Image (tube, rainbow, N blue to C red; front, side, top):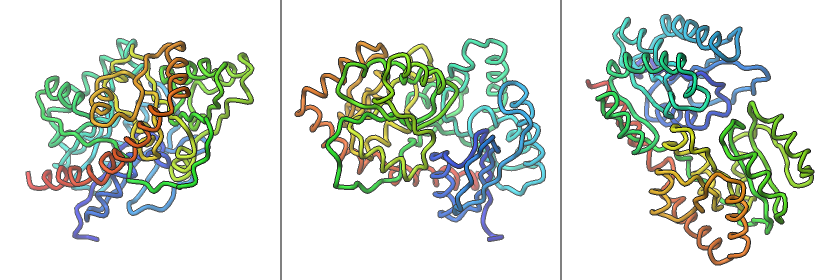
Length: 365
């Protein structure tokens, strides 16, 4: 164990349901690194499962907003100051500053993993002072990083030009899954993920009011109560079920029992326009088609394998798209067959060697 090179990954979220980071940490641990994943403890936090890597959650007094970010930067700085690491992996802009300071102070390697277009997320993009602060941190820190990577080609190209620093691509694909052959014949639609503004959940609820389908919502977030109120207002309590956060292995089982997945995003957010959501590939692994945002990365992927019906964000368009799949069995089955084919290619097994190569190369720089 003492001969292994040590990587510390830093995130601001809880660790229990972060499927991307669990995959990344597991892959590098199995490749011979000693990996620690650092996050934070949140209220009603889910107990952590034993993994092939070390998990550590920092306790914070504040849970959100400016005070949380200021506190977390300090706590993470002092944690990293006394921790042993050969490589620090900063995940997104909100952990990059303390990671950069410690890497330079202690002479360690630094890798930046940009999960999203951080300064253009809906929570930040219209807050000009906050956006300026985060962009300044990125402008200062990214040029000091040893290696950078992100989740898709469009973002990689954008970041490469913006920071004059090459960004590699490691797609956020799930580990290849097995499928239960006893799939029920139902018309259950599933949404999986955080309940945030601009994710199309409210619009989907409104769209199914007069359709012979049900909707299950697997996730939690700040707009949950608003969504519950909308369901009550539309008298859809028998058609819409809120499941809260679901463990990843149970979520896959539930997803493959569904008929259609929802992956819709509001085009007003540049971060959304450049995104490739986890759920896009999760639906493919479950062999169910999806209603998907009509954005650049999804268009490219759907040209390779037509697994989704690309859809605009309006309620009427969502309703019409669902009606199209309800009335066209041939199109639906074609998409199911395409999912089966794509699932063998769009899986973590095709990405993990690229990830390992990035971290091994850093050690030899």
